[in-house]
Structures are given as structure tokens and as C-alpha cells.
Image (cartoon, rainbow, N blue to C red; front, side, top):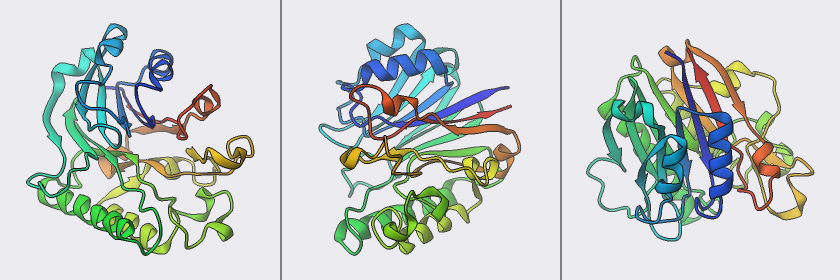
Length: 261
């Protein structure tokens, strides 16, 4: 079975709704993981997406954060084991994870905390969040299973993923502890699908709104599709679609996608 998985930090789903509808219609992913939807479940534009053949599963909150799975209606009956947040974790009000098993693949949609500044409380929270995600994998899943984690990880893994690595080194999104946390997560049994299929390619998924960053291509690759080995074997394409970043009033992130056969 061919399966197209995608991810996009839309930076407010209602503001970006025309872009979302256009992209879904043109790219036709089977599953789209959305981050930073910035709305409650009730305010999510499910009715605008349904007529183009998609069903929505939402874990939102007012004003910030929030994640959603947008699934082709033809696959909606194959959605099972829906998970919202880390099991049993009632201490964190931030809604940053939603997961489901879809067509036999465990799809985990994550919005990893930004961390704000190296050494800050929010930075410590980010590193702890990575540790919780890894513990959740250890407790509930097996690397031999077909599993994909998609989303905004807020970490650029290597120098090739940063427009100016020397200037960026040690700063948020490219500090050593963040990179180590991502590598520790991957050590569970995950592979960066984009970098595996495109070992030397320079491509970014996020550009700051400031300093005309997109036009100057001053970006970072911080959105990822990490997959288990069994899923990697069937991965034929893993790409970044930068075009929507050039549209009027865009998200600061571009969609990413991978195709499995």
C-alpha cells in the first residue's frame, strides 16, 4: 500500500486555512500532521476540510500550541489507538502530541517546545520533553514496528541543516544539548528519512519572518519525519515543499512529506 505522510507547522490553522486547503488539494497526502494550530478543538476548521475529503482529529488549546491529524476520509476507518499527550501525564497543560495507528503505521505528531534561550527554564523543559517522548516509545512501542514521528522538532541536526552554522552554534535550535537530545531519541531505533534519502542536500523547513530570511534563504531544517527501520525500507521520497513559504501571509514553516510503498 502506498502511503504519503506529511507534516506542517501552520502557525495558526485558521489564519492559514486557504493555504491548508490549497496544499491538501494539490499534494493529496494521506495523513497531514499539523502543529501550532493555535485554537481549541471546537474552533478547528474541520468543516472546511471535510468537503475536500479529509477528517480531522484535534488536540488543541486556545491561542497557542495545539496539534491535529488530518486524514483522508477513505482512511478514517483505519484510525485506531488515538493518543493525546503522554499517557498519564496531567502535569503539563501544553498540547503538543497526538498519535494514532493509521493503515498499520503508528503516526506520532509532535510539536517539540522551542526552548526560547539556551540555559533557560524553557530550555530545560524542552530537553525534558524529548526525554519523555523517548520514554513513551520505550514503554509502548517496539523499533521493529512500523512507526513514524513527524513534526516540528525545533532542532537542526547537523551543520548542513543550518544556513550559517558558525553563527548559529550554541544558540537555540542548534545547541549541542538539543542535538544530543534528538540523537538520543533516534537511538531508540529511528532514522531521519530526509537526510537518509538526501545525504548531501541543502534544504530548510523554517525561515524567520525577520531580516527577509526566506528570500535570502537564511533557514534551518527543524521539521522532520523520523521513521523506524522497517518503514524506512519502504520510503521512496522524503522532501520539503518550500513553495507555500512564498505565499501571501505564510507560516514561517514549510510542509514536509514522505512517500512509502
